[in-house]
Length: 304
Image (cartoon, rainbow, N blue to C red; front, side, top):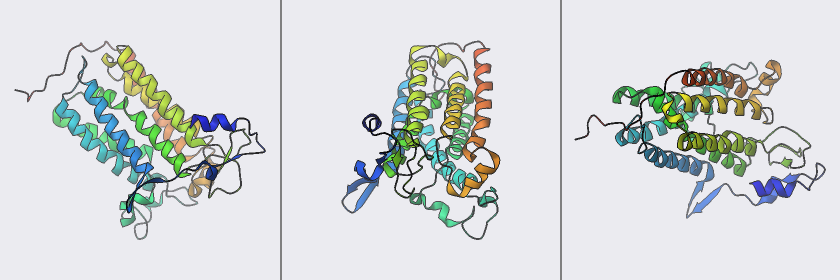
């Protein structure tokens, strides 16, 4: 992806890159079946999270045992999929009024429509997925009598990998393109007219994914941040909030919410992100003003 941007630098604003000339395909054909890159991004993101979380809890200071990581793997996966889908229906399916049709249309394609189950049609919300994951963590923490905030710390470190892969998949699919621009690396996407646009999917993959992943991995493995209860999840929440807010200035609003963005001055994604920034700042300040937790390994109360 970086080579694409580098190669486009000399093209100039008068000669934008055509996405269709990049030779990208939506998936990997496997006989009669096509493994789509968006599905593959979710799969790799979840596998990475499970593998890395299992590695993290072997280090001193872990707030959980392996059996808790196994439970989190299952329930957080459900939370991402169900929460992401319901969140999209709730936040991004509104009409000209800006009111989510999911709460107002119960007879057609609304909240109870069977079309919500058609995951292959697309439509996932980061904020909905986040709520789903938090619900899953809360359930596992309650059932296992774990420290909810510290479990969130460990989960948060792994989330940016999935964010990065998901945005790269959006780019490969030629969807969720950016606003009109005249920058040297502007691209023309299919379905977006003959208008040069920001490849905002790559901006999001870099800022919300790669940068945040590097920061959190470094904090966990190179510092004692893991002993600061809430610090890692606070930095994640603050970081993803700021990154998403900034990136929304370059991303084209969803068509059904374009009028809402023009009327309110901010996109739906930005309005939903403001609470994340506030919460992230509060949790981070809370973490740095409290004493670190004691070092040591978590003990599984059911272990022999």
